[in-house]
Length: 78
Image 1 (cartoon, rainbow, N blue to C red):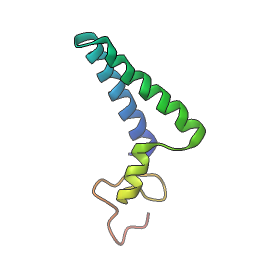
Image 2: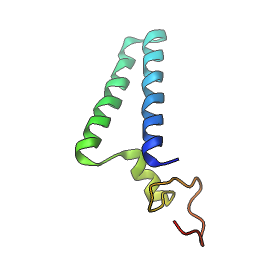
Image 3: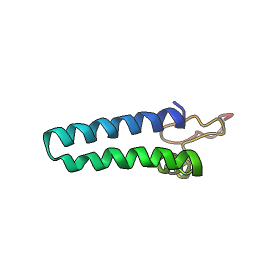
């Protein structure tokens, strides 16, 4: 899985969660959906994306933007 795929999966999941919470709990949960949308828009212009930043700091992303859960093993070529 690449970081782009993970970001899309995470954004979709949080958006659907926000819609469900807005429907069943309180309409104010739609602010979560708005936050996700705004974060996606700003990441296009700034290149800053918190999930990919965290994965890089953990050392879980190789040079090809492929995620290696648990970290990149020594001796691999990526």
